[in-house]
Image (tube, rainbow, N blue to C red):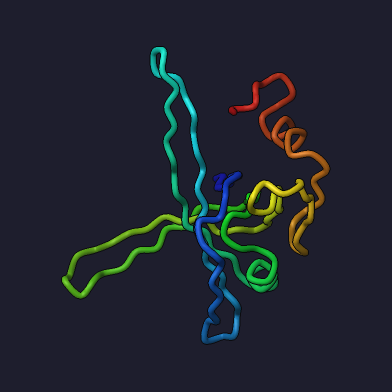
Length: 142
């Protein structure tokens, strides 16, 4: 089975770190991805919001290197949390668990920076990664 997510988006809030009882750091933050499309003669835009979690060294690094407005590439997987509320109802939430994060742009449209965080893999060109993932002859889906 395959569970792989690749997202490019902007942070909607500063990362927040907390620690599990085992001492493992966990960072949570949100990102937004905007889709622009044409409907008839008119251009429209819709926003999609995703919750992201990171663990370990990556979690600690994200809280010191990122803040609201940063544009990042997140490589990870989907995870579903399920719980029963005090009202007896079952709830569910799907989020992205980051395995690697790459900074593309700092807030306020500053110059593009290609800083990689420690657990991010070496990727010289995102477009090349996408081509290898989807095949040379396929169109990149954006």
